[in-house]
Structure formats: C-alpha cells, structure tokens
Length: 224
Length: 224
DNA sequence: AATTAATTTTAGATTTGTCTAAATTAAAAT
DNA sequence: ATTTTAATTTAGACAAATCTAAAATTAATT
Ligand SMILES: [Mn+2]
Ligand SMILES: [Mn+2]
Ligand SMILES: [Mn+2]
Ligand SMILES: [Mn+2]
Image (cartoon, rainbow over all chains, first blue to last red; front, side, top):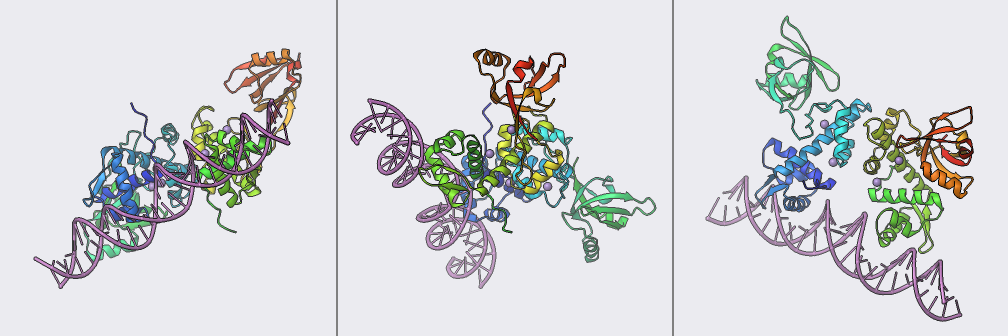
C-alpha cells in the first residue's frame, strides 16, 4: 500500500478537463484542452508529457491522448470533491447555484480524503450536485444517467436535456421559446392526467407547461 | 476601492508566521521564520524582499523586520479563515481538535471572502477556535484575552495558562503532576463553595481537582 | 580591541508551470 | 499529388519559490 500520491492543483485541473472532454468524443485534442483551461497549446503539450511520465495519461505525440485508468480514478476524485463542495455551498451556506463553481474550483484541491468523506456524510451522501450532475462515491463509482423522455421522468427528479426526437423547425422553435435546449436542467413538477401535459421547472425557478406530444420528444438523462 | 489583491499561499503562510512570531517579542528574525516554516534562512530572505516590495513588511537588511499595517490586516484574515475552518471541522464534521490543524492549513488559502463570511454565519459567529484561540471577525477585530487567576475564570470558559504566581519548586512540581503548564488549555467545570476548590477539565477530557491556594496562583487568558 | 561564532544575505541552480515564436506534422483544399 | 492551412510540438525564455555554498554582516568571546 503505497502512500497516495499528491498531485498539484494544475495537474488536477488538467486531469479533470481531459476527463470531461473525453466524455463527449473519446479522444481529446490539445486545442480542446487549451480552450477548456484558458491556456496555450504549447503549455498543454508540456503538461501532457508530465502526465504521461506519471502514468496518468496514454499519449503518443501527434496521435491524440486519453486518461489511463489511474488518471481516470484521480479525475473522479477531484470531480467528487468539486460537486460535494458545490452541494455544501448551496445547501448549507445558501449560495446560489450560479455562484458556486469558482469557489469549488479551489476547494476541490484540498487534499484530505478523510475531510471529503466526512463532508459527504455530513451532507447525507447526496447523489447530485446543484447542477444535477452525479456525485461519485468514495470509490469513484456513480450511477450512469439513463435517457428517457419527459413523460417517463419521475416527478421532482432533476434531469438534463440530452436529445430531441422530432427535430422539425416547428418543434425547435417551440423548445427555443420555452427555454429548452440541449443541456438544460429541468424537473417535472406536475403531470396532468387529463391530457398528459406537464409542468416543467427550470433551475431559475420559472415554470413552463408542455404538451404530451412535446414531452415524448424531449429526452433527458438523470442519475440512478 | 481597488480590487482585493490575491496573495499566493506561500506569501500568506509567511505573513501568518511573522504575525505569530511578533506576538511574542515584537521583532522577528530570519531564523525564527525559517524554523517556523520548516524552510531555509536564504529562502526567508528571498521572501522578505518580496513582501517588502508588496508593502506588506517593514524590512531593512540585517536590521530585523515586522509586518506593515497592511501585512497585519492580511495575516489576520488568514488567521480568521484558519480558525473558522478548524471550528467547522470539529463542530460539524466531528474531527478531533488534534487533527484539524493540517487541513485548516490548506483551507485557509481559499480566497472567497463571501465564503468565509457565510461560513462564519453558518457556524453562529464563534469567538474561539477548538484550541481556545480567538477568531477575528470580518474586520480583523478580536477580543484581546484578559488575564485572570483560575478562581475568577467563569465556568465552562476555555482558557490558556499564561503565567504562574507562586513559582516555588513545590508549586511547579504540583502543577507538573496535574498536567498544568504554560500554554495548557483548561476549563473550570465545577467550583465547590465549601473550600473553593475546583475541578479543571483539559482538552483531552481528563479532570483534575485543585485547591483554592493553587487556583489563585495560576493565571489564564481567555477571550471577551 | 581582536578574534571567533552565529546570523543574514547574495550568487547561482533547480523545479514547476507558463509563455511566444518558430519548426514540424497532419489534415484539407486545390 | 501538390499546395495550403491548421494543429501540434519544440526551442528558448521567464516568474515564483525553493535550495546549497559562499560572502557579508553582526554578535559574542576572549
Ligand atoms: Mn480547480
Ligand atoms: Mn456542478
Ligand atoms: Mn497554510
Ligand atoms: Mn487553532
């Protein structure tokens, strides 16, 4: 049992950025990371070499890169910390969901594992952060979001719009008007048995009504 | 109203160390700081020059140094954060008073002022940290500890032994045996009207009884 | 007062993370 | 298949924080 290696804040930020970027496609580019971290491609290349030397990254020059298993494991622990701190800030210190990210960006680098496990317990082992993102558990495991249409989304479950069925201009115009886009967080607050219409609540507390026809064409993902 | 300057963790650690060291004597030496921060005198000199350039330190080479008013102000904010986080760890996350210092040493460098003020409020504006040290308020003000003998120390008030009246070998032997030394944190849990003897509780929860004669010769300082 | 010892500072390196400008490689367009 | 463009990497530099070894200064002893 070797002592848990301590990584720099910078290293941790790179791991997290790469983890998030490879969620989408699978392979990540230098420019992607530079853009995500507001830095320069040359700086990214420098760090890629360091990450490879630390066996956190699978990387061959000019051929793209992705996290090693160890790299993924570390990234998930940073993400766990980030999201638990965000939850703490919103639930215990009454911050708005829109003002916690920056602070969590610092707090996620506090190293004590015991601290974060105690915090998790103190918060009641929350499963989602204030933005609806899943919080990995102590072992880095988290429930993968399933995708369902809004008619099948349980009431009061925060979910993220992930795809649209009918993509006709008319449908998209309607969604745009209602404020629904890919990535929008929604929650079903009420279902009307009469016509299967439902009321959606957004993060900004506003409520909109959509028809059954619309609801069955909006897919969302959520946890557990 | 200029934007609050952000200092590096290293800078903040130096300011805090110098602040604590000048509490004792008034003027601080390079070796003192090197010893306190587990670093080398040459490194300290390097930093002293930087602190002077930032107007945080009054420093003439070979002539000693002390914090400027601005330096003191910054140091007090770090100390405030350190102690509030320690309080949080002990009171909310059930850490022992002996395991919070290292974690607070990291948390004290989180920059958000709003965070620390919200935390303060969440904790109920505590006046002392788990070690009995005073917590500066949002403006860096804190109640200076007064010195009284143990007979006049209010019950349930955490205090720190600061001096001894009768310093005879017999008295000191007794104090040593009871576990009372300069710097020891004690709390009066019970006063017996019959003979003015009293029961002291230490941080490690153990209880000892001392006579009135002993009590009036042990001076402690505490807050407010 | 002169010498010795301790403290402090400088000189020069090193590590980490970043940058710009130039070179290299890969991808896209003709 | 060339040529042009875009992406990536290298070369060389820099700032922050640290170190060791040597020099300068101050303090303590003879
Ligand atoms: Mn971060
Ligand atoms: Mn989040
Ligand atoms: Mn610290
Ligand atoms: Mn403390």
